[in-house]
Structures are given as structure tokens and as C-alpha cells.
Image 1 (cartoon, rainbow, N blue to C red):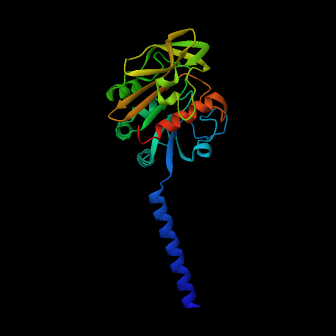
Image 2 (image 1 turned 90 degrees about the vertical axis):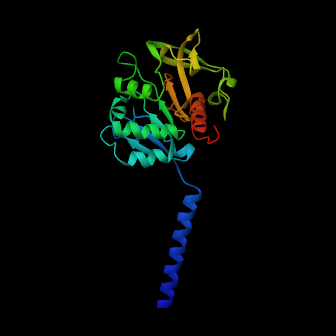
Image 3 (image 1 turned 60 degrees about the vertical axis):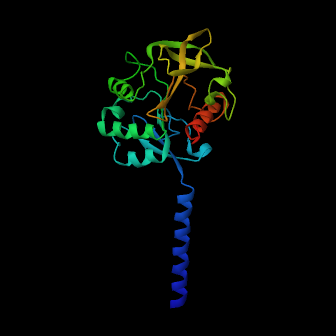
Length: 246
């Protein structure tokens, strides 16, 4: 009996070591999600409206202004994307100097900060703390934000990888609410109003702190449905964010 128990214990320890080794070889990818409350998808009006874990095998780490803590550092280190939810007041995220330092390191390591759709209740669309942080890392926020609905079209697929892989969406039509009429030359327009390319609705800036990326979005359909054109856009965004070769 003693020998049997010892053998069983040895096998369990061997299994645990094998599991830990497998996790080292194949670490799970994470995505950090910031919203203004503690509810999780698919609860209505908390974004994304579908779980990123299911189609993309991502571990979702949810944060709100009240739950920002030391775990953010470790979870961002495991992630390549910080998603800021629709209608979210992102200001508290960038008001904390400690969090801002973590986010600078995140960008330096090749991370992406994705600002999802917002109705722009304040002038300029972003909070002063957000603008201060972005400027500190070399990103001039797009400006001259205007409100209103309209038809959109994506730029041609060869414009950027987000429009071409793994699903070609370049040239396809979408819809927007709100747009920017001014943005720096470092930012690439991925989508714009169908009747006016001077109204940008999806922007990307690369090379921030070396390899970091920031995206700004005014296409409400993104991150709302797990199928169709907007899901193809999400698929491409995720693929680009987690592509180590970019």
C-alpha cells in the first residue's frame, strides 16, 4: 500500500511538472479589457458584446476604474492588446501615473491600445488625461471630432494588413457615427466616410515607442457581433495585434 501511494504521488508530480512545462512552451495569450463597470460579456452594453476567448482562444482580463491593481502589469505582459470598450470613459485609466508607466512598457513591447467607438460627449472625443498620455508617447490624438451617422468604406486592402488578412475587407462598405477631420501624418486612415475621404473613422498609428500600436475607431458595429463584416474586421485586428512578426 505504501509503495502504491508513493508511486501514485510520483505520477501526480510528474504530471504537474509536464503541465507546467507545457504552459511554458505554449503560454496562453491574454487580452486586457477596460470598461466602466464590472459586468462581463455578453451582458448588454458592455463591450465586447461577445467573448474574445471563444473564437480567438484569448484569456480575457477585465478591469474597471475600481479594479485597477497590480495584476494589470502581469496581464499586460501576457497580452498584445488593451481594448477600451465602447461608450467607455477611458480617463481614469490614464489618470494614474503608475498605470501610465505600465502602458508605456506595454507599447514598447509591441502592444496595441484600441480605442473603440464613443459618441464623443466631450470636446475632442478624449479626456485631458488620455490626450496627455498619448502625447507623451508620441501620438497626437485625431481632432476636429464631429457627430453624426453616415456610410463608410474601408480603404483598399493593400493599404494595411488590418484590411487584408486573414480576411480581405478592403473597399467594403460599413457605417459610422462620428468622425475626425484632422489627424497627424503618422496615422493611416483605414476607413472613411463614403462620400468624403476627409472624414476618418478608423485610424492606426504604428512604431510607438518602437513597436507599439494605437487604433482609433468610430465604426459602432465593431466588437458587437461574432459574424459578418464587422467580425471580419475584429478577426483582422486580433491577427495583426498578435502577429509577432509585424
